[in-house]
Image (cartoon, rainbow, N blue to C red; front, side, top):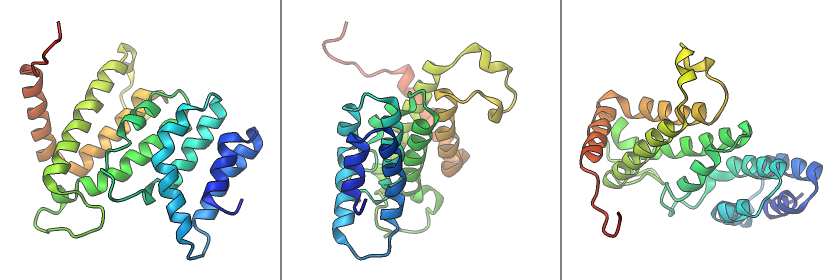
Length: 215
């Protein structure tokens, strides 16, 4: 397994053992000391095609290995892409019953929270860091993510969760995975910004958009 492309070809088409080995080999290929520009082109290609390739996978073990491998290389995706370009797929992964798949989704979403919250954490600095999103765009993405996370939690909520006093004691499931993302979002944004998002969310709930053509 000498290239990212070769690893993913085996992950997508190999038997269970070779699929597992290829998913582990991705990290080795990634951090191999070379100056192969083609490797980074292949990484961007695999990340861009991830939702499409994942959709074709039917075996649970292959899904796990595929998502785990994507999460290893995700941070090198095309910086010209909007940071939320894979969020719909990530939310699909958060529903998966496999903990490795869900954790990989949490890991990839968390990776995007840093550049999205730079303007909140360092308001006095005008960042020129590669990949950092303009504040007005970041605000829109963060609000959309905040709303989606809360709506997701409401959908996943079960009365039995009330008996757990501490977050760490919650059963390992989609509810806990989504909560992990929300907790990290709140920690990065801070109380003041989260209060702003909560207020905007309340406004949205009290004045839902009028969608033409709906009953």
